[in-house]
Image (cartoon, rainbow, N blue to C red; front, top):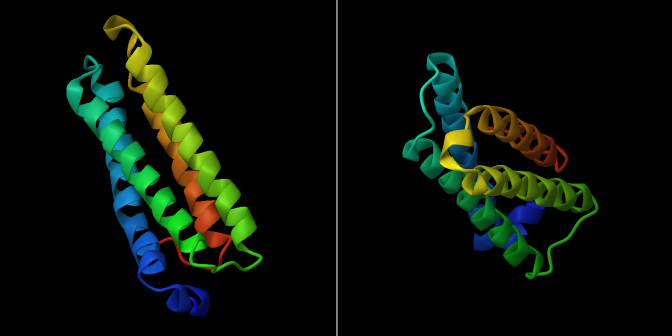
Length: 135
């Protein structure tokens, strides 16, 4: 952890540590969606649950990040980090929301593969922007 995070306390540590669950759920969602595409399976409840879990874990991480900001901890690199994390959350919600609203016969795994990969790339860039390692 950086000195800034050590000073911020529990919310920063939770925000920083929770990223591992977000990354794990993102990788799981991509893996399951890729498997579904490769095997030409029908879109199923497991994919919907994985996408929901990934999006909600990301939302919770954003909430922890906001709580950390309210402790008064801010340094210049956080500007880019905040923008990237907000963008990642928006993209995750778009993927989940679009697939939820599509009629069941039109749901596919492809948006989850592409959308979740984009979210993970944005998350990685956001983590690196504050000088942290991704894992």
